[in-house]
Image (tube, rainbow, N blue to C red; front, side, top):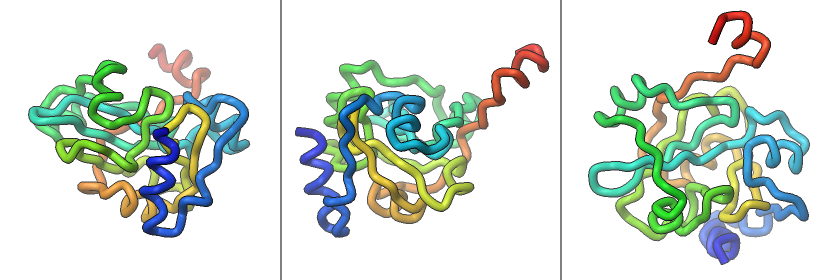
Length: 167
């Protein structure tokens, strides 16, 4: 049902037919990248956090990780992720298919992270663990009703660099 709600939501921009559904799971960055045959960084993952009066969704590149200090500086609070039950309640989407579209709660604020801007197009989920759509960053920002571009992430180092640097 969530995919259909997203299709209906995206119809206002004529994008409902561009939602892709897969026979395989796309519920994680790695699975989505494999299903779409793109690099994992181009997957636009939607991360869900507690806010004082609702929820904060941050759409970030697949290779980005929340930087707690940047998050606190931006939002004035610690980055505390929602539980799977809270994610479903606030967004209407289950973990693995969370996206910034067709959100039922007005108390949910969406932000897009600058980690996405290095790509011409990215692939956010569309309400299920086996769906996605290809959008430009500007389209993603507009369709998500983003409250702004933020810089709250850092890029993950490749595993070999992490091991060499002692992290």
